Length: 384
Picture 1: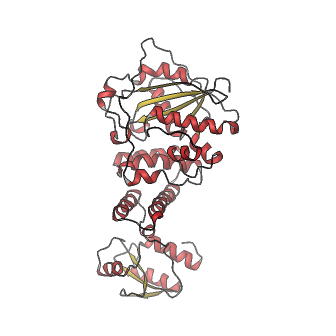
Picture 2 (picture 1 turned 180 degrees about the horizontal axis):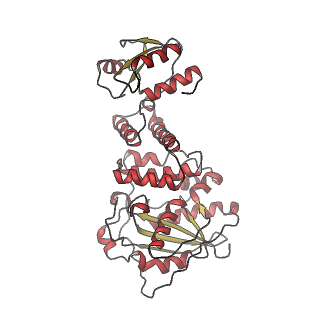
């Protein structure tokens, strides 16, 4: 590659440029064709709006107030990107923001292709998790402070170098923006410490999805869930990301179920789930709209012919319909919970009914009707 590579990272005020979120820090690291790092550049960017999740990126309003806006750095940034192959960890995320920022100024950032170190690390370095920290750990690449654009760009450059022998021809960026004479850069005054709560630790352990679009969506979901909260705006932004990646509702819900399952697997790694971990898993399940019941058991819920099952609460479908299905599948339906009950099916698995309370006392799993439908399918070999 004649001009080499431009490895980029951006920190942003949110998840989607379609919701008027902006770049607040950008870094570019140049790597030549032989894998030598030749230059680096980084600046904070004044977005002219609030800074979003400051607990994640650690950038203060005082620092950004003295930084240039994107128009003030556009020429300098364009010069550092143009003619080089664009590289980033989850390239689609950074590229969407950069294209939106340049489009606001009337310029088109053309990057028909590029290199994603998240994808390269999985293919060539054996990284089983998608996070930048996990990929760097596998590749023995130094990892600086997470969510610092310059540190993340350096780390991504290190991953790129480990993969260069596998990289063929890739089209470079095409972008022409006049350089201004008064361009200046402003760096952050202090490093931002890594997040220490449960989810932030587990995110680094989460396995990859089965396809690159799934990985790209889940990487954005990782960012959104660092604070264990999904605001209505963040939920809408995630839908924008899903649409940009051409993911439909069935694919999204499958990704959410896999995400929760992977979090639970990591929590179970020491053989037990603490009260704090269980609370976090329940919270994430509620945010993602999936059932938490099965992942809170140390063994997956299974049914066998003749097992006793009990229903509680008002289901979406009539109770007698579910009871007939259960009986037809070879299960025994009972009206009350005993120690011999294998499973309780509830309209709400967090039900406060007497049956649900007794089931918890006996350690009997309580599942939703959707999960029960899947268990029936496994038992009969049918698909609902």
